[in-house]
Image 1 (spheres, rainbow, N blue to C red):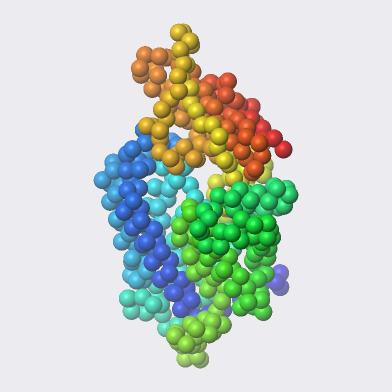
Image 2 (cartoon, rainbow, N blue to C red; image 1 turned 90 degrees about the horizontal axis):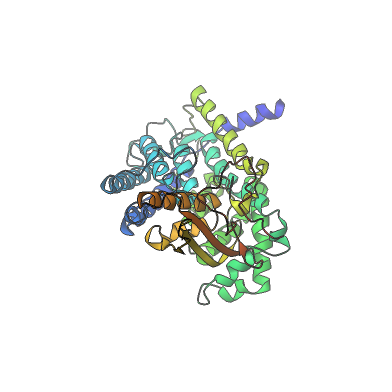
Length: 444
């Protein structure tokens, strides 16, 4: 009980609010860049106009894409919200609207799932509970001093720490330590002209990524929250995230958000560069207006972090191979869980009456991201096959059969089929609580 009381007192202590204010500026800036990129690259057309179908989450089939002009309008609203967050103007409501809009688009298709997008949404939600808009903003500060209760900075740091923690759990597997996978396959795919490519492709580089990657993730709570260590730990963490930005071509601004989030583990007075630029705490400005968390906020945050700690573990209790089938994998921070190198990706349509069969030109029906996602999720293969079956009914072939020949190398193993190629994928049953006998088990 004494430890709990000390922790409560620690969370209520006043700290310099310019730290969360600075993080808010970085977050808003990066989100503006991210949403602008969606607009400039034609995300709406690529994911909600060109494909013939989307892949909804189980239970969310009712959630449908709105017409393209409205979806584009939502992206512009999100862009405006990102700027409002960055400038600290009506930040709380802007952050909530941003999170709701992002979540809506995010849930329209499984193939849009990405750990870093999930993190962006959660950070927006948490920012809306803080007074980050009182610092480095265009609005006039209403707080009596320059402090906020420590819990406001802690909840943001704790959310980022969840990423490190669960990313370390996934590395506690035989493939990571014995096969050095998926690191080895990822290293082999790095273009020769990429930053430090020769080093990462070497055994020394592969071992460095394996051991350092695990070490930073696993010891992150100690390295970043323990004061004597964190001023030194920030260097390897910053280098780690910067290296990731150069190695991986599919993680966008995520490494830079993680680098910006490193300041959440410090107090302003610990950072020499920031100490010169921003006001220091003095007896006059160390005035805390609301040291106690309101009951509604406290209830929400307790429920929120309980969910964040327990929900990622659900896959461990489901009957199907967690990372191979990805059932229970999403929303669990299982970052770079495996590698899959495809060698065959074919859908075959067969008329049971005439016996005629032929390959489906699936590329006219789904986009490349959806195709790539089907390599990871057998449920998406089933959804696509069911859609093709429905198209067959519309075209006068009610009993059409749909077979999938999808073969890939999983974590460097010999290529094997993902689902049984002689089973009609449009008829297979699915329940997350039952073993999928139509999925070919991974060869150990």
